[in-house]
Amino acid sequence: MLNNISIGRYYETNSKIHRMNPTAKLLSIILFVILSLIANDIRINLTISVIVLLVMGLTHVPIKLYWKTLFGMRILLILVIIMNLVIGTSFQELGLLLLRITTMILYTSILTLTTPPSEIAYGIENVLSFLKVFKLKVSKIALSISLALRFIPTIIDQSNRILKAQASRGVDFRNSTFKGKLIAIKAMLIPLFVLSFKRAEDLGNAMEVRLYDINKPRTNYRVNKWRFFDTYIVFMHLAILTLVAMSMIV
Figure 1 (cartoon, rainbow, N blue to C red):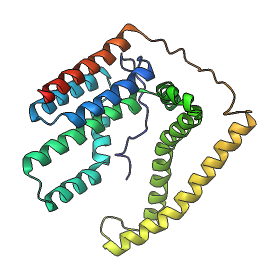
Figure 2 (cartoon, helix red, strand yellow):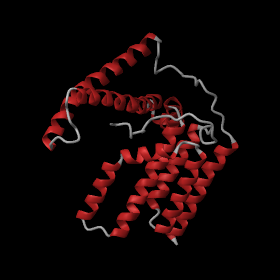
Figure 3 (cartoon, rainbow, N blue to C red):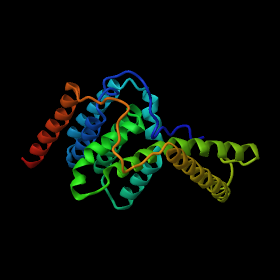
């Protein structure tokens, strides 16, 4: 029922993108998002889309997983279409906006599909390390984001089990009325919240038993070396961003 959503799921395989330093991946995504936001030309956005498809091919991740991620965001895309049609946006501008959103969703999904949550936390901590100057607990921010990403698949799995349990009791989600669907969703949310809080409590107890202390310096299980390929990818994004910014100014 909710199996089409693959947000936050890590797909393990051997590829250059998987072996990249998580800090390089995050820097590349930040540069890509800035590039997508400033590019107003349809030809530039089509070129960006081709680059996204090439990077997706380098990951060796099945295309259906990217499609599931995009399909899971269909409600957001439909709302964007409706809102822009209401305010009178032209079809060309609407198409450009949808292309931007689609490429950003696909490109950011590369991070979660090719990087374990613990490595994402490591990358976030490195990227936000400059905030330590302002005495902010960067490690806590990274841990919170990592746990949030880790909980997405867990919540989806729990929702699937609850929906199947309700379906076995005779609840018809497909053919029921709109009011019936709202009642079914309401009946799903309460046990979902209870189970989520229980999982969070179990996780907190497990960390406490293992004497985890967020204020102590942490080591990383994997040795994340910065390789030439990481430098190449980051500089490639930076070069493309610079060229597009210069073309927009001219």
